[in-house]
Image (tube, rainbow, N blue to C red; front, side, top):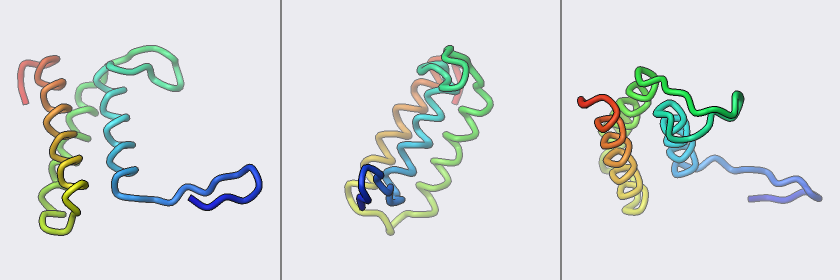
Length: 91
């Protein structure tokens, strides 16, 4: 991260991108408060869409990720799929 005075410039990274998608999924699964309403709300269709998007990214980036990125994505997909399955009974 580059700093200018008190401002920090965030650099986009693959892990930061994955983390943001994971956080959105947790919000849609009702696991975290929605930052706008400050309430736990579920939108399981949107959660499934992001989980499927992460799955697509996993397939399309195969062979192009570092070991740490691949492990992070695999673990994230497993955890989110299990949470979704616990809520819906399906994957």
